[in-house]
Image (cartoon, rainbow, N blue to C red; front, side):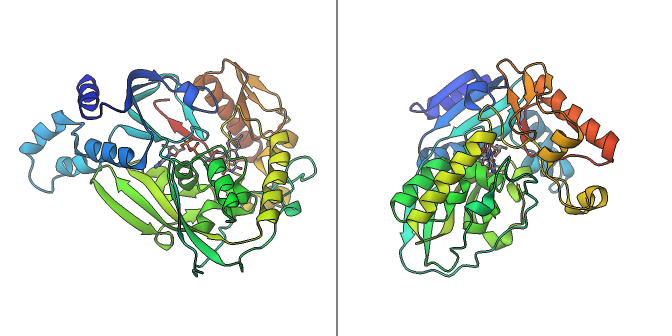
Length: 375
Ligand SMILES: Cc1cc2nc3c(=O)[nH]c(=O)nc-3n(C[C@H](O)[C@H](O)[C@H](O)COP(=O)(O)OP(=O)(O)OC[C@H]3O[C@@H](n4cnc5c(N)ncnc54)[C@H](O)[C@@H]3O)c2cc1C
């Protein structure tokens, strides 16, 4: 890695490039060891230039020697192009648990922040909602989206391009100020546009993919940039194609938003923030588990249940602690760092909940957060 560090310093004298850099402060959980190499980019051109450079670096020289004698099309040769390069993109670190031992390789913090309003004329896209299993069983106690929800899908639409490093709260506010609505449902999500696309972030019953036209992606393995129309990619509740394809780096996305009722959208954003701030602790990584499938819930409870409800009412684990990690007393599907939690504490608590659910009800709870590094 030292050679890669020297090369980066040489080629990118203006970028922040650090060795053995602590990642915990760059996450909402404040957990995690160092990256071998850390680079921060602050503009889209810088981000792209860096990615292009890294796509040409051979991180596996010992393998390429061997490949010299490997026939074209052999498994080893293929591997050179399909192995994940040790490069990880970090947005705002609000949906990740980073290992105490850190990340071996290069971590790029993407803070390229730009929003372009592309067309004022009416565009027609197929605004379509993703099926959701996100549901609160006790809306009075937690979140009541029905109080703020409304349909604006017949408002004139407008095309907006947002770079992946743009913070979602900034994009929402900036666009409302320009008279553009649609993203208000995603208020209080402390992530970037890139992270929100990777996790197909949801706000109430809406998903970020509902508003996408296409996504511009740089493939670190091939060095190619491709624009993927939304319809070519599979979108699901809290899941996207990108989640398991770290070589696909999101550069920007085009959104179809609305010239809707700005006052109403602003009120919804504000009301949503008020509701969420009461039950969603910020020293967390958001909801830890996805809700179980409807068919599982119907078999056991006769209706859809949220994971928070199960952990609270069936396991009675609210407030339960392992080391510095605690099941939030505010919301049982949030695990918080009470101050000195390690990734080991956090993962042990995840395992504890999973084991209890498995032994009591016989199904597996699926984590929603992304684990980065070796566990
Ligand atoms: C208090 C709180 C409330 C939350 N509420 C919600 C909520 O209501 N709804 C919801 O859906 N989520 C919620 N979250 C979770 C989280 O904020 C979102 O999933 C967010 O979109 C993650 O974005 P990020 O930039 O922080 O991603 P990160 O955590 O930085 O990264 C997540 C993953 O995406 C990858 N990644 C990031 N950027 C890129 C890129 N440009 N290209 C390719 N890969 C990339 C990373 O490598 C990592 O694997 C909440 C979190 C907290 C702490």
